Image (cartoon, rainbow, N blue to C red; front, side):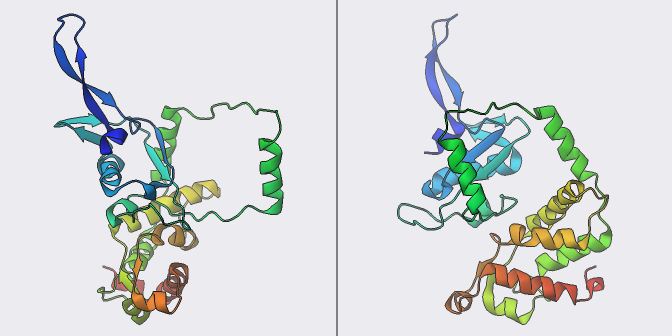
Length: 255
């Protein structure tokens, strides 16, 4: 139930007055890092309980609003094979996830290392690397990375081209995409590119950064048509065609 995630009011006895009163017991959402394992197994009401937390960083219960402590980070897994007992994720929730990362089978060497570590009695010690203040500081540092207007215009044009009713949409988008990405896609394209810039040891966002982030940011934000499904055209293929199209368009049109 939603209250299993957000928390609920319970009746307790006040030690001083002896009177009964309601006390809010915080749910697991009140943490810095939330892992929703196989999130598509939760019913829609429970999924909706995450919407306010993931966008406004707050939880409202019984008319009271509680702030979530930052940094606040939600990641979720979804089983793409087994569909029994699952619910489709609403677009509003998918849009709140910055990236959609597909994890394939590990390589032979990686799988050997997994087996080696999980079948031996040796337990590797876990040591903290960053505290909350360090994490917030790094997040602010990422925002300070400069992005030229041309790069931002490139990201906005790319996202706009995913929308079938946009004047910039190519013909294949109008045929194969039913619903395009929203403004959050633009924000996350640029923000993710800024993080990639720092990790690469550079000082400014490039077009290549936008291209690298595009499949991860757009994949879960576009809805394909029946024509795409019937012809076996994947979202990754459509994004690749979009990247080819945006490189050959006149970015000055975005004004």
